[in-house]
Length: 192
Image (tube, rainbow, N blue to C red; front, side, top):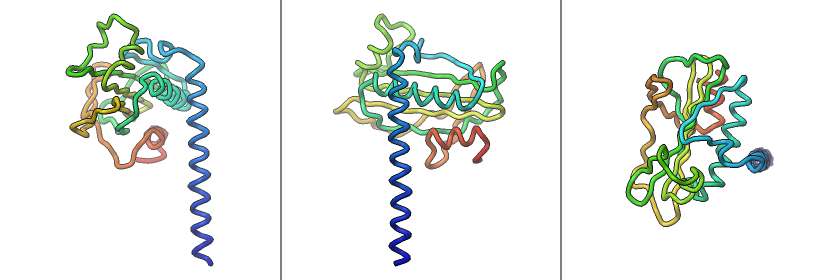
């Protein structure tokens, strides 16, 4: 009987967590619908600053929801990583860099010289990715998602090994099981 109650309690916790996660996802998707693609992604590579980690967290979640809907492809991989390198100095406490990339049938698309709207190019690509680089105090993280058109598959499961941000190079360290929640927990110094 005690074992049954434990299992019921564990199942209840997972179902409540799942419901909260679904509601949160819907909240971010609804917020993403309030603005067009260019509002979140004015270019394929840009920087924003925020006064708080909560503002940055919300921006990253809403922008990810907008990108996922706009790219119209299933997410196939993506991880969060610690960034190893120097602290970023800015007027605001939180810096967020964003990098978009897209690949056609054979080659990477140079998004700096496209003649169509950015949203159209990533939607029509075979593969698209989005990476957020988030810096707060002496810590930094990368949060990436890769999207791939139906009928294709990646031949490698490799992730980014380094990034350049504000002329500094940051190496990546991918802790097991990290996603956006743990990445922001690391920035808040809740986890190491």
